[in-house]
Length: 141
Image 1 (cartoon, one colour):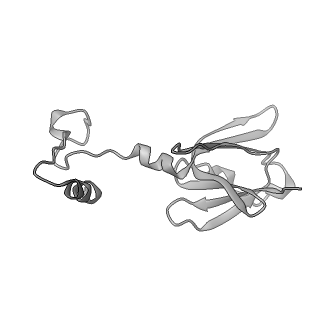
Image 2 (cartoon, one colour):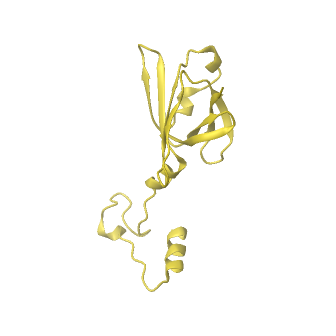
Image 3 (tube, one colour):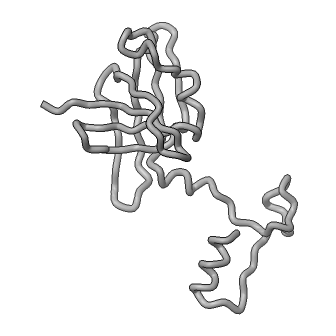
């Protein structure tokens, strides 16, 4: 029978900082070329979760949760949202696959106004470059 585990890691370094015991089977979605999603329900009052600092580990983007079936990672990525139900004492933590981090990046002119991302001064124009040169410019921005 498969054993489901949930590990928590720092998003930037990938260092595993904790593991937690889910209340039920974690849910996750995966499709080809899709960022995927995951949801884990935990009971913070569960003695198995006594050493887990859920307040810190639900920081949006700072920590990533990994859903494992035995030793196979089925879905992993940063926390996007969480919700705590006082009546059931259930903490529901949700996130996206690691590709979801790249949906948040904004490519803009570095000389533009940072407080107004839609300002015309933030438009980025790359001309006179090959596709490789454009990719190089984007990667260095």
